[in-house]
Length: 310
Image (cartoon, rainbow, N blue to C red; front, side):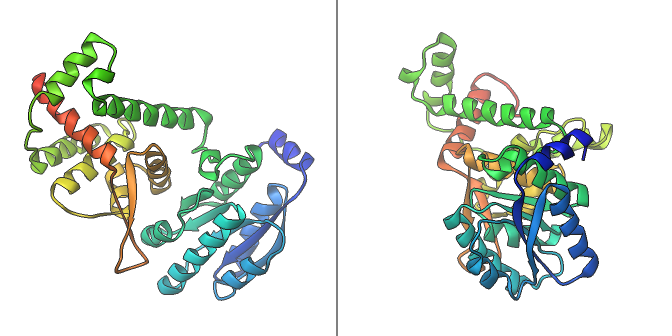
């Protein structure tokens, strides 16, 4: 943490934190350091066996730091579901550190409005998440966490807004549009029956996008929102289900970044979460009706204008 940030944290009233983790001295000490570094005080550090009872019994409103590494999958699924319900009801914020293998379990169990998921986090990731929550108190927690600088978060916001706006315009009736270009676009997309769309064609687009990464290196052409839109669109055409962990892979960015994008796209009304009725440890992601209609209209308009899908 920068010196100025440390002084700013010290001037604010201390916050309370409750740590839940598999018993491990080094891990416990590390999380305690995170809380103390960001100006907080640890109420208690408890195991996953005690977690639900301790959260229920806590009178104050602490920040919940959940470290899921080493926890049993069944125990974790049950505990996260109950903790999420308590946190949502009481307005508690949660910062959860998870392993890549636990993405589906954590995503299925933690669905409240003030949740930040960190995949394989370092101590700096924990500090950054807690410090950002303190700095922007009052906003949903996932809105508080910066990847490393404000510019990337601003770009994320702008990209989601752009996609949502394009799909909203594609989904509106022609009469609701107020420009000649929009009216022509509507005619191209809506003046005929929706075209049959081959999911293999969408998969080809995805493969072409990954080919760029192999040729020029990862990180230069990141576009996780659209990569996930394409993956979900192809899956729905194939009548296949997509787990959260699979969608994170499709995003072609680090898992923590992908999870943040999934939250953004869900809030924008383009994605929807579908719990697995047979396994509470997993949830599926899909395009919302609005997102699906927008993608179909995008394909229709591109074909009418003689443009390739990209």
